[in-house]
Picture (cartoon, one colour):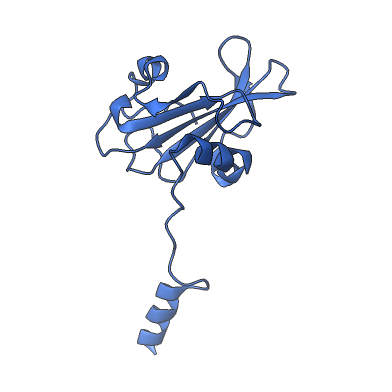
Length: 145
Protein backbone atom coordinates (compact mmCIF):
# COMPACT_ATOMS: atom_id res chain seq x y z
CA UNK A 1 0.00 0.00 0.00
CA UNK A 2 2.79 2.44 0.94
CA UNK A 3 4.54 1.74 -2.40
CA UNK A 4 1.37 2.58 -4.32
CA UNK A 5 1.02 5.86 -2.42
CA UNK A 6 4.63 6.81 -3.15
CA UNK A 7 4.18 5.98 -6.84
CA UNK A 8 0.99 8.03 -6.97
CA UNK A 9 2.76 11.01 -5.38
CA UNK A 10 5.73 10.72 -7.73
CA UNK A 11 3.66 10.54 -10.88
CA UNK A 12 0.96 13.00 -9.78
CA UNK A 13 -2.02 13.73 -11.96
CA UNK A 14 -0.07 14.70 -15.04
CA UNK A 15 3.02 12.52 -14.80
CA UNK A 16 6.54 13.88 -14.60
CA UNK A 17 7.04 17.62 -14.42
CA UNK A 18 8.36 18.90 -17.73
CA UNK A 19 11.09 21.56 -17.76
CA UNK A 20 10.05 24.82 -19.40
CA UNK A 21 10.46 24.99 -23.16
CA UNK A 22 13.65 26.75 -24.26
CA UNK A 23 13.38 30.42 -25.17
CA UNK A 24 14.84 30.95 -28.65
CA UNK A 25 17.89 33.16 -29.16
CA UNK A 26 17.66 33.38 -32.95
CA UNK A 27 16.13 36.87 -33.47
CA UNK A 28 13.25 35.92 -35.81
CA UNK A 29 12.27 32.97 -33.61
CA UNK A 30 12.49 35.06 -30.45
CA UNK A 31 10.31 37.72 -32.09
CA UNK A 32 7.74 35.02 -32.86
CA UNK A 33 7.88 33.77 -29.27
CA UNK A 34 7.27 37.30 -27.98
CA UNK A 35 4.50 38.01 -30.51
CA UNK A 36 2.72 34.82 -29.43
CA UNK A 37 2.72 36.11 -25.83
CA UNK A 38 4.14 32.87 -24.42
CA UNK A 39 6.12 34.79 -21.79
CA UNK A 40 2.89 36.22 -20.32
CA UNK A 41 2.35 32.94 -18.44
CA UNK A 42 5.55 33.62 -16.43
CA UNK A 43 5.54 35.38 -13.07
CA UNK A 44 5.40 39.13 -13.45
CA UNK A 45 5.00 42.45 -11.80
CA UNK A 46 1.29 42.92 -11.07
CA UNK A 47 0.98 46.26 -12.86
CA UNK A 48 2.89 48.60 -15.13
CA UNK A 49 5.36 50.74 -13.24
CA UNK A 50 7.35 53.87 -14.13
CA UNK A 51 10.42 53.27 -16.23
CA UNK A 52 13.05 55.40 -17.90
CA UNK A 53 12.32 58.39 -20.13
CA UNK A 54 8.66 58.87 -19.12
CA UNK A 55 7.66 55.33 -20.04
CA UNK A 56 6.02 52.49 -18.15
CA UNK A 57 7.12 48.86 -18.10
CA UNK A 58 6.31 45.38 -16.80
CA UNK A 59 8.87 42.59 -16.33
CA UNK A 60 8.11 38.89 -16.75
CA UNK A 61 10.50 36.26 -15.33
CA UNK A 62 10.64 32.64 -16.36
CA UNK A 63 10.48 30.42 -13.29
CA UNK A 64 14.24 29.81 -13.24
CA UNK A 65 15.32 33.48 -13.55
CA UNK A 66 16.60 35.10 -10.36
CA UNK A 67 18.38 38.29 -9.37
CA UNK A 68 21.03 36.34 -7.47
CA UNK A 69 22.02 33.92 -10.24
CA UNK A 70 20.27 31.97 -12.98
CA UNK A 71 20.91 28.72 -14.87
CA UNK A 72 21.46 28.52 -18.63
CA UNK A 73 18.07 28.92 -20.31
CA UNK A 74 16.68 31.36 -17.75
CA UNK A 75 14.92 34.32 -19.34
CA UNK A 76 13.17 37.61 -18.68
CA UNK A 77 11.01 39.84 -20.86
CA UNK A 78 10.25 43.53 -20.38
CA UNK A 79 7.29 45.15 -22.05
CA UNK A 80 7.85 48.87 -22.59
CA UNK A 81 4.70 51.05 -22.67
CA UNK A 82 3.99 54.72 -23.31
CA UNK A 83 3.70 57.13 -20.36
CA UNK A 84 -0.07 56.55 -20.06
CA UNK A 85 0.22 52.75 -20.21
CA UNK A 86 -2.14 52.79 -23.19
CA UNK A 87 0.17 51.53 -25.95
CA UNK A 88 2.94 48.97 -25.86
CA UNK A 89 6.08 50.32 -27.53
CA UNK A 90 8.66 47.55 -27.35
CA UNK A 91 9.90 44.22 -26.06
CA UNK A 92 13.25 43.61 -24.42
CA UNK A 93 14.38 40.11 -23.55
CA UNK A 94 17.39 38.41 -22.00
CA UNK A 95 18.18 34.69 -22.22
CA UNK A 96 21.04 33.07 -20.32
CA UNK A 97 23.28 31.24 -22.81
CA UNK A 98 26.38 30.46 -20.74
CA UNK A 99 26.84 29.25 -17.13
CA UNK A 100 29.01 32.22 -16.12
CA UNK A 101 27.80 35.40 -14.46
CA UNK A 102 27.40 38.86 -15.89
CA UNK A 103 26.39 40.22 -19.31
CA UNK A 104 28.83 37.97 -21.20
CA UNK A 105 26.56 35.04 -20.29
CA UNK A 106 23.34 36.55 -21.63
CA UNK A 107 21.74 37.11 -25.03
CA UNK A 108 20.06 40.55 -25.19
CA UNK A 109 17.21 41.40 -27.56
CA UNK A 110 15.13 44.54 -28.10
CA UNK A 111 12.65 45.57 -30.79
CA UNK A 112 10.20 48.39 -31.32
CA UNK A 113 8.66 46.73 -34.38
CA UNK A 114 5.94 44.21 -33.60
CA UNK A 115 5.43 43.15 -37.22
CA UNK A 116 8.90 42.69 -38.72
CA UNK A 117 10.79 39.73 -37.24
CA UNK A 118 14.07 41.11 -38.59
CA UNK A 119 13.74 44.70 -37.30
CA UNK A 120 15.50 44.59 -33.95
CA UNK A 121 17.71 47.16 -32.26
CA UNK A 122 19.66 44.61 -30.26
CA UNK A 123 20.19 40.87 -30.77
CA UNK A 124 23.53 39.71 -29.36
CA UNK A 125 25.38 38.35 -26.36
CA UNK A 126 26.72 41.06 -24.02
CA UNK A 127 25.20 43.87 -26.11
CA UNK A 128 27.05 47.13 -25.38
CA UNK A 129 24.03 49.35 -24.73
CA UNK A 130 22.45 46.75 -22.45
CA UNK A 131 25.47 45.29 -20.68
CA UNK A 132 26.56 48.61 -19.17
CA UNK A 133 23.39 48.88 -17.07
CA UNK A 134 22.90 45.18 -16.39
CA UNK A 135 26.53 44.61 -15.35
CA UNK A 136 25.79 46.14 -11.94
CA UNK A 137 23.59 43.14 -11.06
CA UNK A 138 24.85 39.74 -9.93
CA UNK A 139 23.46 38.05 -13.04
CA UNK A 140 21.84 40.84 -15.16
CA UNK A 141 18.24 40.41 -13.93
CA UNK A 142 17.05 43.85 -12.80
CA UNK A 143 13.70 43.99 -11.05
CA UNK A 144 12.44 44.85 -7.60
CA UNK A 145 9.69 42.26 -7.25
